[in-house]
Length: 243
Image (cartoon, rainbow, N blue to C red; front, top):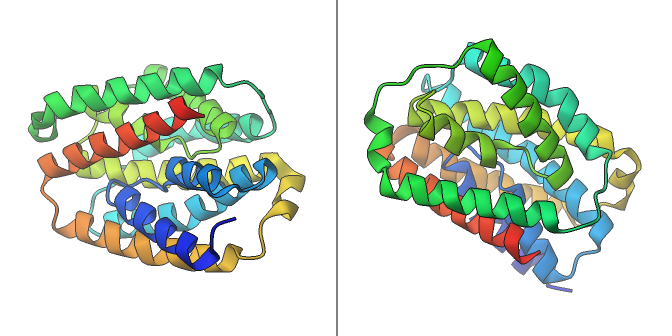
């Protein structure tokens, strides 16, 4: 088992990278825990707990700069939250779904990397007929995979030109927070398996979340934000393909 302090430092770095694009970092935490030899029953609940703190910080940072669309968030979240609860209560056991999702993320990353100027194009929000079922599907995926779902929502919002890049980060952060909370409730008894070092890990991701989201919300150019999102997607997709 890895030294807790060293592991906390790795979590801090992951949280800073993911918070910069409005994500909680669950996919990175899951990868790090797998490499560090964490027990399977600890991984999903711990990833979601850390997700809660980082996504809350990212949301506050982006929201205070005006990078948030309440109506668009609500359209996706209203169906996503109950589906995330449902997904959190299901254990598929197999790996096929993770590999499929990993391939989707890497394909999305490639699209963003080759079309970074999407960050500067005008956006048109989707209507309820599109946003509601899409949110429900993303919420279910979030619960099943132990992530907040923002890793799938963000590229969709950018590639479909449904929101501006910085607004995408704010919406994703709020989406991740709600889905992570619902996913934790769906897991119920597994919360008792959290490791004793959890407070240390929470402190580490809080620092990382403040650093990453603070710099991104006020300084990082929009095109750079899209490129950073593509990098995050590649990391998350590779993690899913490898598990």
